[in-house]
Length: 129
Image (cartoon, rainbow, N blue to C red; front, top):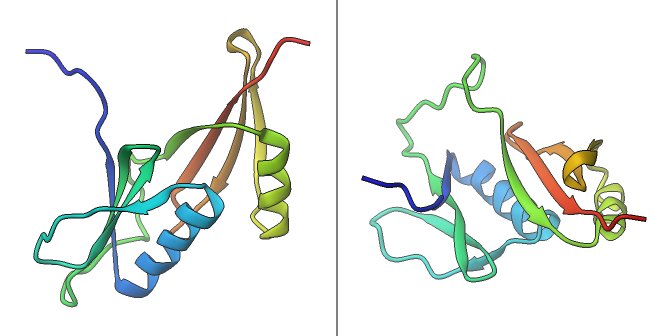
């Protein structure tokens, strides 16, 4: 038995927050809304290229989503391009971020939070100078 890859992350939220998440992941991170089958509930599937990587699902009205407790989830990471443009984009939208560097791997990382408070990591390959 072998795992051959990563498929997607699902975020479940009330409709208003789910809409904010869709705007964030499409307009800020750069994912694109794409085809989603009829699953009997409201939601979105967001794509990076032709790969569906993020599902947004509406929580049922009687469903309580606890947000005041520690969980093991820390962040989701995306491979990105054009770091200077992304930094300017985040600043224009007043999204706070920090920067990290994995020098041995030639990667610069930008860390921010989505509207639900989930960690988001944006990774950029950097050419040696």
